[in-house]
Amino acid sequence: MRRVVSVSLGSSKRNHAVETELLGQSFNIERIGCDGDVAKAVALIKKLDGQVDCFGMGGTDIYLVAGKRRYTLRAGLSLARAAVKTPIVDGSGIKNSLQAIAVRAMKEAGYNFAGKKALVVAAIDAFGLVEALQAEGVKVVMGDLIFTIGVPVPIHTLAGLDRIARLLAPIICRLPMSWIYPTGEEQDKKERKPSKYAGYYDEADIISGDWHYIKKHMPERLPGKTVITNTITKDDVALLKEAGVEWLVTTTPELQGRSFGTNVIEAILVTLIGKPPRETTTQDYLDILDRMGYQPRIERLV
Image 1 (spheres, rainbow, N blue to C red):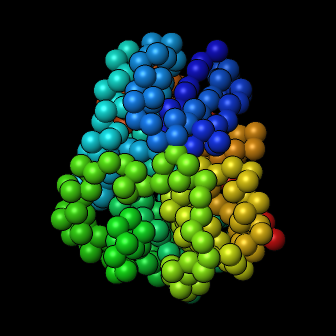
Image 2: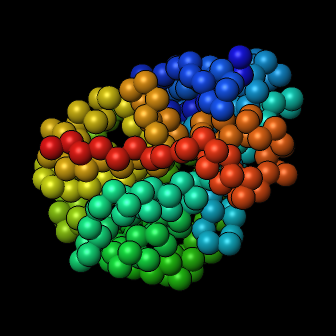
Image 3: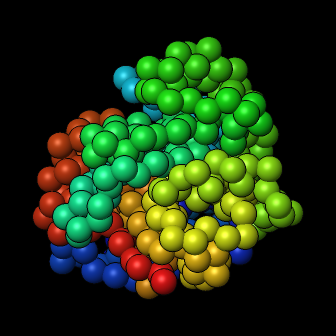
């Protein structure tokens, strides 16, 4: 049996494990949260190194990808270096492709993008999503400054995001991950209402991007909204239903009650392809996804 383990800086309350068959191969897939403890995550990777087929890295990234530029996160690098024998991936190799596939699948399912406005809570690592939405005529507001460092300035173009990334990304990449992204118990918390960011949610028809940023600041009610996000649990789905969200789209499919993160999907693909991640191309990923009949999750909640 092939084994994929996602070691995450996120909450251990979101742990999940499944066994499934993919392209004729049996897989054990597990997500293990380390509650923001980098030392614990490093120790776990070292313990399992050589015993699993591929690691996924959750709750942080090795790289932030903005357009054609790639920025290295110090926190992610410490985890990546802990794996000596087993390959480790953070999802950045497939993230943009999966985001574009999700938007295309929505269109094929009959979703009407005409006249829609979208909030992308953090677009620096979601260029594929922004480009796909804009290609459908959606007016996109990018909240990178708002949701990551609390500066209430929306970004409206990818060119503008690229300029800001050049200035801020080298600084942000040196900060502890907990300063810029919810880790550990912070992933289980939600800002007390009313959210100071409620206006950005209210103005958007589509709310998209990283789930933990969306969840942290979302208001109590989101009637009729569409949410496009990544990893999500049954409890998260219940929260969205309670808020009145109409459509839920995740860039990764549901596996036994859980949509795993893109790092897990990339780890599965690397295992199936059988090439080192540095030698694996975008086309390699797309070809194996096509063979798998890969489809994002599109679910009507109300």
